[in-house]
Amino acid sequence: MAVSENDFDVVIIGAGISGISAAYHLQTVTPDRRICILEGRETLGGTWDLFRYPGIRSDSDMYTLGYSFRPWTNPKSIADGPAILNYLNETVDAYGIRDKIQYSKKVTKVNWSSARSLWTLTVLDKATGKETKYTANFVFSCTGYYSYEGGYRPDFVDEKKFKGKIVHPQQWPENLDYKDKKVVVIGSGATAITLVPEMAKQASNVTMLQRSPTYIVAMPAESKFAQNLHKYLPDMMAYRITRLVKVLMQRLSFWYCRKYPEAAKKKIIDGAREYLGGKFDIQKHFTPHYNPWDQRICLAPDGDFFASLRRGKAQVVTDHIERFDKAGIVLKSGERIDADIVVTATGLNMQFMGGVDITVDRKKVKPSETYNFKGMMFSGIPNLAQSFGYTNASWTLKCDLTSAYVCRLLKYMDGQNLTSVVPEIDLQRVGEEPMLDFTSGYVQRAMKDFPRQGDVRPWKLYQNYILDLLMLGYGKVEDPELKFGAVKN
Image 1 (cartoon, rainbow, N blue to C red):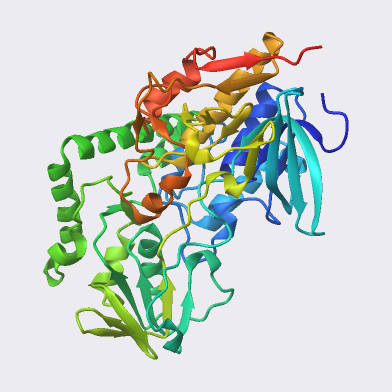
Image 2 (image 1 turned 135 degrees about the vertical axis):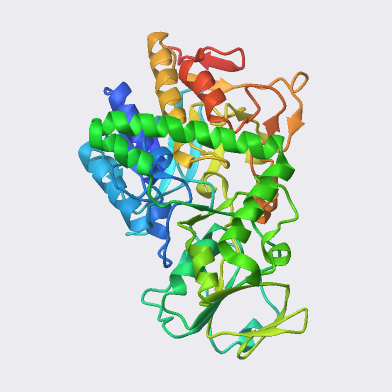
C-alpha cells in the first residue's frame, strides 16, 4: 500500500498517447490503486508535442489511432499534430488524468526487490537537477520506441563546408524561415513524404533526395463513410462502427500485400503512375526493391505529395550523396543539388524503455537477453509491462489492448492475494525469431539491443490485432509461462 507522496501502486512512465491510455484503463478498472504518470518532458503528448516540423501528421487514420474509449469526431481522418495533441489534452481533462501527471520527472533507474515485491525508481527532477526515489508494486512503461534526445543523423563528407542550414525533423528550429529558399529533404520515409508538399507551399523548390524508392499510397484525408455515420448515429456508436471497418480493412490490406506481393506492388505503383502521369520515371523513383510492408508504407493524404511534384514545386532525385560543398550536395552520379536548407529526414534512434536501467534484486538486466511475452512483458522481469504498438497498423490499437490486459492481470492478482508476476521462458521448448520482420534501417540498427522474440505463442509477436484481441482481451490471464508470488507475512 502507498504510504507517502512518492509511493504508488502503479507508476506509468510517459504521458504520451500510450501513457494516457494506461492511466484511463487503470483508474477505470482498478480505481482503488494509487497511480501516477512520470513524464520526462515539460508537457504531455509525447511524439505529438515533440515533433514540430511543417505538416507533422499521423500516417494512420484517427479512427484506429484514437482511443477505444473516446471517439474521434474531427472530420479529418488523417489528422495533423496539433489536432492530435488537442485530442490528447481533451482526453486527460475529460477523465481527470491531468492531475496524475508529474512533469520534468525523468526515470533513470528501476530496481526490483523480490523480498518486498516492490520497484524503487530513481527519478531525476529536470527542473532542479535533484534525484528522488519513488516506489511502486507495478511499473507500466509507455515511453514509445525511440530516443527523445535526438534522431538518427549520419555524418556526411564535407558537411561543415555547407554554408546553409542543416536541420533534423526531431529538432526543428522554431520559426525556421524557408520561404523562397531551395530545400533538400534527405530521406524517403513518412517524415519526408510529409515535409515535401508542406514546405513546397512556401519554398522556391523542394528536392526529396532518396537512396532508394518507398511505397507511397494516396488516401482521402477525410472519411465520408465516418461523416455519414455521425449524421445519423450517436458519436460513440458511429466511431465504433468506423473503427471496426478500418481495422478489418487494415488487416485485409496487409494480408493481401503479404499473400500477393507482386500484385500489391503493381497496384501501388500503378496508383503513383496514375497520379503523376507520363513525365516521371516511375521505375527509378517510385518502384522499391522490396515487397510492400517489408517497410512501412507511406501515406499521401489526398495525394498531396504527388500534387506537389506535378505542379513543379518539388522533385525526386534517386542517388547517393558523395559529399557536401558550400552551396549544396554533390551526388555520386556527378550531379549536384543547390540548397539553402538541408533537412535530414534520416530516421529515429530506437531505444528500449526510454533508456531506463533495469535491475532485478540488484542484478542488472540486459533487455537483449530477455524474451518478449505477449508483446508486453519480458522474461525474468517481474511486475513490469511495456506498451508497444503495431508496425503494420495504428499504434494505439495495441496500446489499448495492453492497458486492458494489465488491468485484468492486476485484478486477478488481487483476487488471489498475489503481489508479483514474472514471465519465465523454457528455452528447451522455445526457439528464436527476429523481433520485427522489418527491413527499415532504423529497425535493423537497434534490434540487437531489444528483447528477443520466440517462435511460438506467447513469446511470438504476430502484429495482428485480431489475434491479439483474442489473446489479450479474452484469453485467460493464468498462463503456464507466468510465475506468481506473494510477499510472506
